Amino acid sequence: MANAAESSPNPLPVLPLPDDLTALAKPFMVGPVRVERPFVLAPMSGVTDSAFRRTVQRASRNTVGLLVTEFISIEGLTRSNLKSAMRLAFDPLIERPLSVQIFGAEIVRMADAARIVADHGAQIVDINCGCPAPKVVRRGGGAELLRQGDHLARLVEATVAAVSIPVTVKIRSGWSADCVNAVEIAQKCVGAGAQMITVHGRTRMQLYTGEADWAIVDAVARAVPVPVVGSGDVTTPGEALYRLATTQAAGVMIGRAAIMNPWIFGQLADLVAGRPERPITGHDRLTLLRAFRDMQAERVPEFAIPGRMKQLLARMTKGFAHGTLLRERAMRAQTTAEMFHWIEGFFEAVDAGTVTAWADAARPEAVER
Ligand SMILES: Cc1cc2nc3c(=O)[nH]c(=O)nc-3n(C[C@H](O)[C@H](O)[C@H](O)COP(=O)(O)O)c2cc1C
Image (cartoon, rainbow, N blue to C red; front, side):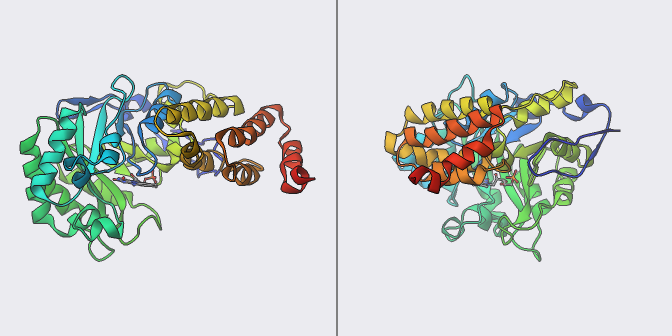
């Protein structure tokens, strides 16, 4: 057994892995769509826009097996809402294969929205059955569909009939601890024609608390004849492989860890191929953040860019000595230039080994003096 200790700001237990990692990281098919590497970038609302997906794909040297958009409202799509339409934008050369995730509850509208998604060139359309947000659930969408199994089956059936691309479904383990019904829901979806199921191993009531339950991922994977992707709390390449080794899941989805570490899919490819780990330098981080800024600048006005940088910056600097100070300084910046003044100083100091001196000069008392 090899082991998979990773250098991570939050050290994880050492996990046992089999010696032959290539046998573990096998491609899988979603209908006719081949997912070359079984590692999927999670849909994350407010995060996984085209700029972010391209950033991860580039940082990871085109090794992301499947990319998923943030969820898009079927109401918005079918009523030509500008924001929803903009969320469909993608670069077909880099973001491939791409799954577009949609959410809502109405059967006819879901089928119409899926048609729009397919016409737009996506390889897969995914139906969201996991969003816990009250404003989504109240209107019958997201995780509420876990409580409406028969309606969900009709929804999937109509969507499958409307498009020629594969339809997939992303679910949670259930609504609450006393209603863990992912197996039954997955069977209904597959019976209605779904070609892949993703399971986030938390109930709706858990939101993002507690630990993801991978036993339920395994149970679903054993119960349905289509690929099942597991989601929840994977933070390192070793952990992703461990989930593949210890469950019947065909793939592993990575969400928050890809914001913290957009290189993670490339690191997974290296680990599988037996290549040595490449250290990520301050310069690498700076280059990535600059490229992300420039991609945002193509789509949003200057004043909106600092806001779009925040998620990525906040998670990417977690665990660094004086990262909190950087976040405080950069997040308060009024302009992109000011934000980058702090980011550049910090990451240059990281590479030079002078972060303590940077922090001494960057503290508000020092700056205001
Ligand atoms: C900020 C944020 C936004 C999310 N938005 C979506 C979404 O739009 N659709 C969806 O199916 N899941 C969404 N999720 C859930 C993730 O896809 C994933 O299942 C969950 O975060 C657990 O995986 P992780 O621990 O790797 O992050 C979101 C999660 C986060 C943190």
